[in-house]
Image (cartoon, rainbow, N blue to C red):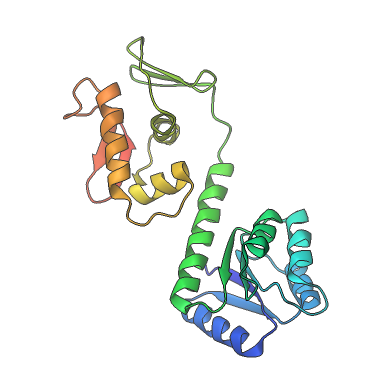
Length: 232
């Protein structure tokens, strides 16, 4: 499904430049050139991302951001010539998800847009899942969400926080294959820039702790060319 973006930028040239790039990247774009027009569009349509300038006529960007956050979790990426640390802190403090200072390249902008929408999509998927049971079992593996403990064949296995959450992710979706990128984004809650070694190390250590034979794992399976999943 085509993603819809609200672009709020009062500079006509910049607005048109960004809109053309986003449409080229196959996004549907609604453009607003002041805060009042942006508010009207925001209440009229459902958006997957908002690109928001701070220096706006009629209703400024900070006020608009506060209004958006009263009713919506839609990702907001601030684009502004006000690039001081204080401005960035204020924008993020009022609920923006990211901040890009002018001037910026279209490559950087589209990368930030893609990352923000991807994070929001993954978050929505996990939010829509039913609440996890307090204890999850699989074969001889028992994971207790209340005590953050793991047992294999009745024996306690000490895990780090990241190892525990990786195992929980795989156990609660044991029929699903997760890519390394998905695991990194869901557990580390950061953008993935090919941090493959981080995932490899954590999976190896996790296998060493829970598998009887880590070289022939029975719990965490490698799906070559894709990622990892639990069991059969």
